[in-house]
Image (tube, rainbow, N blue to C red; front, side, top):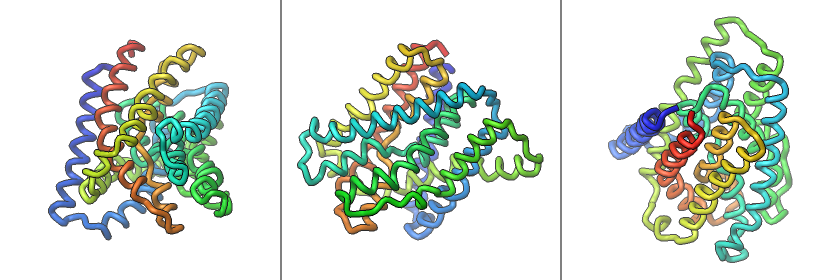
Length: 309
């Protein structure tokens, strides 16, 4: 994968985001339309893209590779939970606000942004690592995530973890494990639905950026500290650790890309639901999403050049 390919694909994503900004400014996509399209993307298109990547991609992985991906994913998220406890203290965040930064560390946008970006710039087999991260994310948020956010007041709800995305991700792992080949009509239908994901998700991202006030977030030095430590230093550290333990190039690129993702939306949605102050999360989501367009491009170019792929 050359530098030019990475730059082309990330440039395409930036253009799609810009289209979303334009559509919002022209009142073509308002808040109500955006809300309904988000449901379509999250519950239909994104899950379909996960399965379509398995059914139509050149993915030939052994059971050992699949198990290794699950183990690495579990270790990765366990490490994130530890870092989520430490990083707010490193950044000097007030005790009553640390839980928000804790969630920001663990729950990044591995689905809404991670899946289409991975599909655009990584080899087909890398989708396995993206799927594993999405499964871990969903299972952990409704257990660990809501407990951290509510300081233990909110009860865990494993049932809510079984979202369409999680179910489809688990189904994709089963399809991959048993090498299931469904009828062509199923494969084509899933593929056509999944193909809408990249355009819709990136356009909605542009809409989200356009309607957010970004000035205050950009002035928050703690958010920049978060970006430096979580979105730059962590992926770089992972790159060297994964190489040191003998992981192949696709594994390294898959997990490192997931580590570069900006702050996810689910903590914000849950905070609004229980009446928490969402100022920190909304500012962080907007700033990290905008900055990620640069950090993802630069880091993935460096990683691919170092690996020689």
